[in-house]
Image (cartoon, helix red, strand yellow):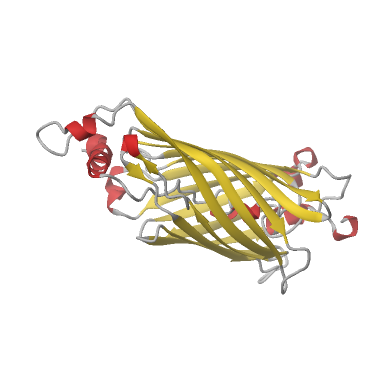
Length: 328
């Protein structure tokens, strides 16, 4: 049953016409904000590259596998500050393949708004969806002509999104809406649902002991038909390594670990690695052994030689500049 369960579920959905496709799911959302919010681009004031790979529901044939590569940087034009970024995503589930390329740009307000800085951004790109190489497991005893007609088809459609991101040295908050064009992939019988993301996080410095910092994060996701939320908390030791727990509402609990290799070896400054393991809590738990996710990020400062404070690389990974204030 394990071998055919997911194929049968996907085939049934495609035959009836799918109207809400959930975006690829990433547990380490707190280090991967650009894919959800174009206003995040450039907020670290560094040129940053991120790679992430996720293998979901290991042991279940046709289970989702996802990866992304992204880069973002700040730029200054005509006395104004902007951020730019690009993300390439591959997402595979059963016999469905999705490939997206999205470009992000935002404008940074020149003055602080309350205790933080505000960016407003736009996301443009395209997604290609395809159905191919399928050996169908039919939900009825007889073949379904509508399902057979989907095999080896693909469609490309435009992506459009907007977002706002408010942040400072120890907090962030963002809201964004993606897939606003609501495009229909007619040849594969899929209509892209619009999605909204609401995120936030805060870092308490040394709340219990001088060697430790405390960093909770939350992400709410909805396609306006259903909604879910991820709740995360990380403990950071000596600005070097971190570990934490993430709970995804009615779906999974995950263990997160990571390290900033620049503190261990100076030649690896600005290089961070992370890993998470999800334990499934839904009815699919009997058919899989969990999910694995690996992330790597590397950041560079292109403006001028600057002193990097190692502590900023973990403590404020996504909530502030990593450059010493006297060198800004």
